Image 1 (spheres, rainbow, N blue to C red):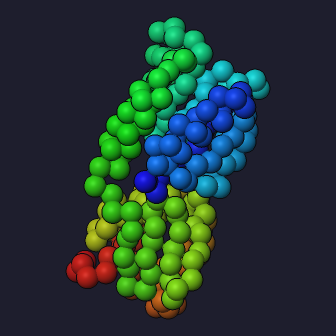
Image 2 (cartoon, rainbow, N blue to C red):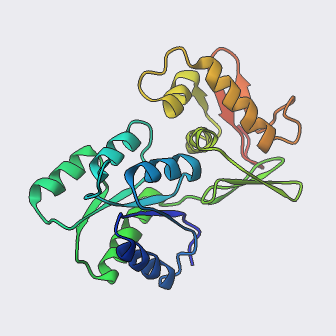
Length: 231
């Protein structure tokens, strides 16, 4: 069984049910679904899945448009599905930033093998439970456990924490963190970053007013200290 949260997106309800069945039988229990591009974006922003299986041919906002929007701020792995096998579609998806591409109809085993390969590349050695001085962060489910109580991280908080965790023990500059949550044009968002940092500290610190895990490095940025690891 895997704790990876997977978002399945297809406007065909029968296909969506088939996808859910395939993943459940393979031991994936944390599944999300969406039947349109707009719903897919909302679910991604609210639930920050580990991987997205995204249909290309949808009315309104198609899969390519969804992927373009996601790639503005996120590198979440995306596997594209299409009823068409034309090379142009595959090339377009990969150019936009898809991690892999699978044409319908497909064998369940091939889908699962491709998904497994993507997850292994994207999260090669990720410890999904990150232990801090006053809390434990469940990376797969974007949850924080502190004093026996569970809190959920927002999408922005999770993006911040992922960037800090990738550089645990090292200083991450204000600019790098702003870009992680606001995209390329982040100038002027420093106050927004401060707000997200404060909210994140409230969830992960035993005493948010005296942080020991997410500390400020004056004039430079922030550093995440893991429990038992000297900075």
